[in-house]
Image: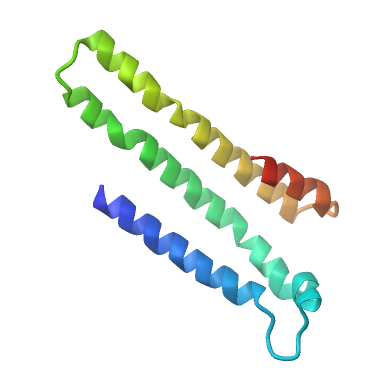
Length: 122
């Protein structure tokens, strides 16, 4: 459990630092030049691996409470009911998968406005 939390913290902290480095303009570069330049493109390419890690983290969070629910001193029917509440996390996993698919499409399309809209909706 602690390994998952530590891995999540380290991954997203590292990702935030990389995004800041790629997205911040250097000396003599305007914000507009930075936003349309190659560094911003590279930043977008990193979104697919980040989304894939997000899927793994969501799956980990979905699976984590299963053991605790099974150890509860409840009837089998009640355990199923509690498990179904946690199973709503499947929606988060499905959303992460769609986000990853749309990010791959974003990296392979000329119509970035439409592709980024799909990403933001997930």
